[in-house]
Length: 111
Ligand code: B12
View 1: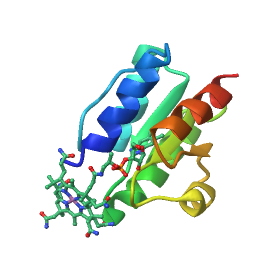
View 2 (view 1 turned 180 degrees about the vertical axis):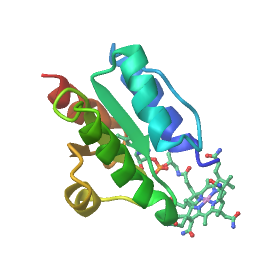
View 3 (view 1 turned 30 degrees about the vertical axis):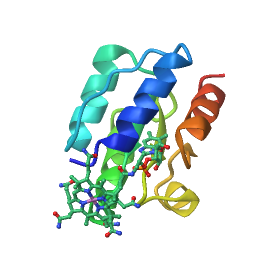
View 4 (view 1 turned 90 degrees about the vertical axis):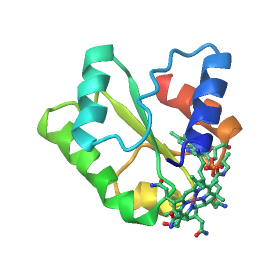
């Protein structure tokens, strides 16, 4: 349901010339990885507004490791329930505080 921030980030990344597949809300960890493989995505972006859903972030990272995709597919997070500390704790590649920062960080991940 908390979709506004994610949609703004997706729109801004598109406006910056990047290709974005928006999976919507309440996306299961397996679905992030399945879609990334299917779309040949280089980066998975995850928006987290509810603290109770932070553990699912670790699941995405674990699935990427299990599937030997961790080096190939980067993960960036944002949303009011996460921070630079969450990024470190969950071994995520980048954290962006807002839509402008998202463009900067995603471009860095792609470079
Ligand atoms: C609007 C809102 C809602 C709306 C959402 C409308 C919609 N369609 O999006 C509605 C009314 C539906 C809603 C419902 C609920 N909400 Co609400 N909601 C908010 C509120 C006030 C603002 C969120 C928002 O849209 N901000 C504006 C956007 C633009 O900012 P943003 O999300 O931070 O996104 C920016 C950055 O974070 C970043 N970013 C965001 N996502 C991503 C992703 C990536 C990949 C990157 C790189 C960057 C990035 O870039 C964005 C743009 O700059 C917040 C409070 C807050 N201050 O955050 C509570 C808040 C998120 N809600 C909360 C709660 C508890 C709920 C409910 C459970 C309430 C209830 N009891 O029903 C439900 C849950 C619904 C659900 N299952 O998801 C809590 C969460 C608590 C927690 N930390 O766990 C908050 C924090 C309020 C609070 N202080 O208690 N909510």
